[in-house]
Image (spheres, rainbow, N blue to C red):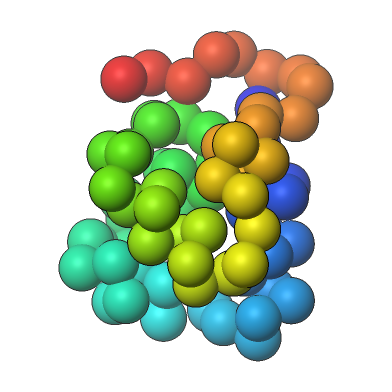
Length: 72
């Protein structure tokens, strides 16, 4: 299950995954796992993503249909 809204918001902001990871202070690998829906990430990180992209974090966290549920 991917987070297509998160990916779309990042791409709409013209940012790479590395740039977002750097802004959040996490590794590229960790951010990629969040965007792909493999892991959830900390709630404070979602606050930062909401501010960065101007999209409600509830929408950013939504997993699109298909695949396995995320691991914690």
